Length: 105
Image (tube, rainbow, N blue to C red; front, side, top):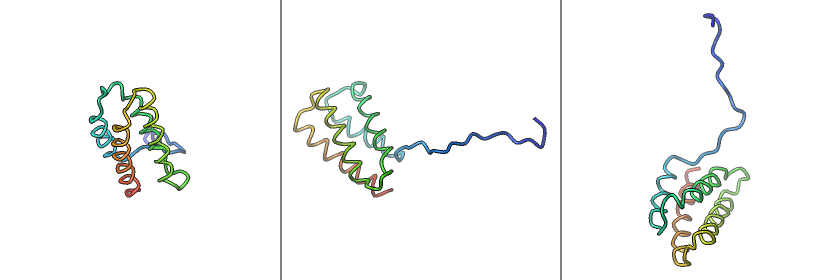
């Protein structure tokens, strides 16, 4: 490469969605209260985080977060047999997390 040539910097036209850095540790703390091993929760956790990261594109963030939460809870209940009491507690914790996310957007 000559002195006049500049290295090409890759660019993307679409930003990769992500959640704020504090969200994953907060979610992990919530999930640690469940009676399941982290490796059993991992695919559900990843799916929920992906859903949250994709929120905000239509402008109704609360509705989108609600959809993510309900899908996450349904998957945990159907697949891992999360009890109704644990589901209610988890839903309350996730609602708070989502409100915190919405407040920072």
